[in-house]
Image 1 (cartoon, rainbow, N blue to C red):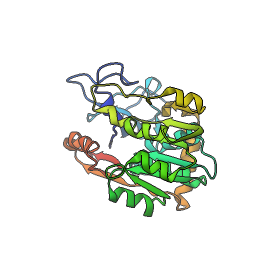
Image 2: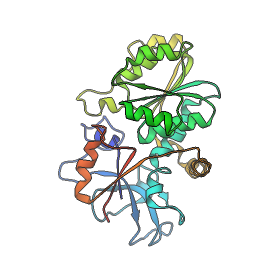
Image 3: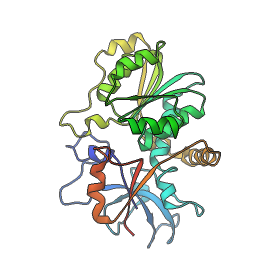
Image 4: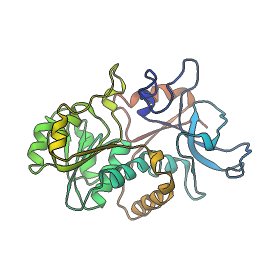
Length: 295
């Protein structure tokens, strides 16, 4: 089972715009996949083990766990591959660490999440809610905003397709935004910076607004505003938190079992549908974590 994630598009740009090596013509795309070990020379990963690991888009891959740029996660016997790649997968773990270790929201604060109806954003928003924050989710379209309010129990939403994000933030956050989990960048990042509170924190998870652009992702217009406001902006990768991944997954399981989390998974069928499924990420035609099952 393969995961379609927006960050794969960033790896298709020229070298230097992604932390991973740029994709090479006539070579398979590499991304996260749920796999079963068929042969092994590594005692830690015996034949029959199920893993979530970075793998190429092909029927069989040779994987060297010690050289992987992404975490290698074991799938427990009582967990399905779909759950291991969905509600307990890489996107959810990125949401966990980005929100709790980077944005560091405190009870009662106002937290804003961009791309809030997506796989990572929806989990980040709910984690902030679980920690007692007032959460504002920015998403595209009335149906996504409605799902955030009614399904994910997010306090308030902003539809960037029909509303002025900066004006709505000024209205909803007269004392400023305390913490921002950013999946999008671009004009939405600027709108939040224009409404950031003193000592606000910004966790940079992605910059999807720039993935299809020929230009690098831009930063805020006025860096002195961040200086005067003592604002902290910090990017992160899931690989920064490898020692604590199992602890994080345990907490996600606990919250899910308690009914605190909702998570949407969009499962497509067929290896041949990987490219078209991936493209759906950029038109908003998917609902939640987008997976393609090939066997």
